[in-house]
Image (tube, rainbow over all chains, first blue to last red; front, side, top):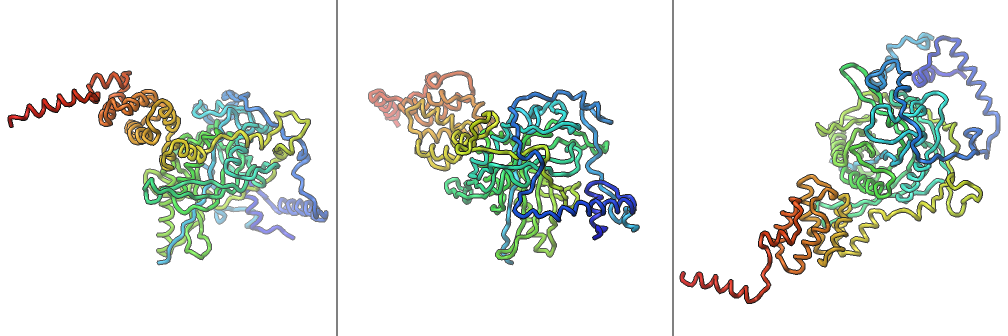
Length: 108
Length: 456
């Protein structure tokens, strides 16, 4: 079963990945096939597991102020800053409309 | 033309009143230097992990109990993914699958026909209450084509209260939100001040003809006060009706309320339908809550949250307080609403009643008509009143003992309002407002008046 072009384009926009070429798409297909083997296991009546930690106790912290006040350190990571604010582009830069995009997928 | 049935549902985000954030130890505070209340976890630096704040869980449980919800003894945390500059991790930790509380209800009251004397009680179902993280704040600088990001708010604990679409207009929504606000403030789980962003309301609005399926709904955001909430909803209902009646269609979109223009406009920067790719939060095991029966024997009690213990310690909710005021003081139900609607007014009223012989039914008139209107005229809160409960009680005592007339009392109150530190008795003496009680003296005055006019 091949993954449809619509699904591939949807994935590219959601995860901001680029499947780039036929090899990339093939690798994705193989990964899905590999994961599909899970369906061979009979899970009737078995509660799904979230993580191996799910039986551990969730630690509850007391409501004390113990962190923060490290503006300088945090801003060291910023390429651009304005008076202790991080600087970002104005809103999300919209992905080019699908019609305008020249992706490999459209060529295939 | 067939009648239209508007349908209104609300999604309310209440900021939890706590010292530190939901999953980190940085401080929760309004208005601090940018990025000063941010921990490495809040900034989503690699290698950091969420650690749940006990107080936030208690706040959610209290709120759930106050809203008649079932508290889920096991609830789960999930990641909701989307890209935005003020969400550094690229996902928000929320409770999508199994939230902490479900299936509750909120009762609120409305005046029919704008007359305070006729109140009707309505109920809205609460679908669920979930714990989730707040995002940071984006300041849009359109001139320089950039956004400035302050992460002080990122990670603050929120309770999202989801109400079923049981409301039909702006007035109902406003009344429901007001009552929720009072409940949250009474519990202390949130200060719920809309102006400071501690209570945010998004409205889902649609219209349909009776008997037909629900219409397409729009989401209205950017509502900054309860008054604007009613306006925004009523505008949107009208807009949808007009659009449909002229043959148009309603888009399933997000609209922002423009308070200056009094209308809703489509919101920019909202890309079509989002796929949030919900997944379990792998770094947090399930949240387990206990009650008296299931309390584990050997656990450190700091690690245990007992729902029954919290239930026993819930304060009187507004509806209970109102009932008690009516029963104890013989005032009208609508009076009890006004008393609770103004911060500190009920306490002021009770304080005056304690210090005066005047019957509460009479005192209430002075509180609601005279005192409250003075406060409103000068935009003062009860706490800022230049007339204390002691002074007012003093004045009312003079009136009750018939030492002054009711007109004189109003004059004295006007003088007391100046806050010059005089007592009511001093003002009465200064302005010679005493009622004459002496029969003989009265007769002499009347006789003198009659004599003075004998010659006419």
